[in-house]
Image 1 (cartoon, rainbow, N blue to C red):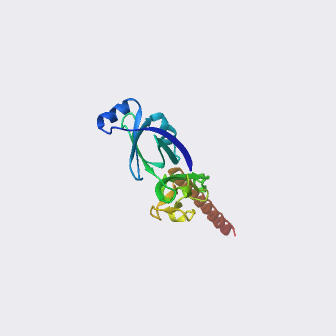
Image 2: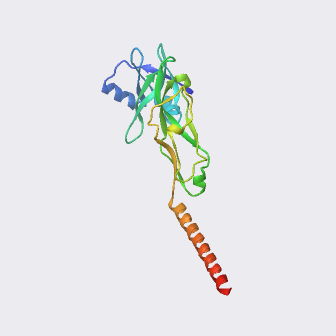
Image 3: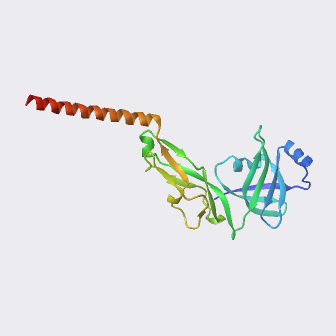
Length: 212
């Protein structure tokens, strides 16, 4: 898992007024929970760009005064109009305690169903996984080359390390190749051509019989 470091400043006051003042200065209020005590801090929004605007998951090393903790980003709030970061919650993690996070799904390969005119759909962008931090994968890479039209990959068909516990429903579809109109049209045209060829063959056989 990738690592990122963030240095913040401890928040002395936690009221709404103080929070608004922080945001006006492009400072993001944050909270770390899950340890012995919650840590309230803030840092400039630039500190979080590589963490927030990325599909990857990170182990976050947070330094606030004398406090040094390991955490993962748990929840983030954005302004509904400007998309500015309003608040971030972090979960403190420990080497000897399992954590539960959403691990991104990445599809690889050119599915044979897509080559035949179908459409590949990613039904699940992430999988909910429980494991120790050291065993947690950065992402699930799923090969879809073998998928023909109408076929899918379900969670219970995935191969993964037995140190991981997948918490989503086992028969949930992760990815599937669906029939498209163009593929249906091609099938109909092919069926029509085969029908015409068969009819021509039967007609030829009838003519040959008549000549005899």
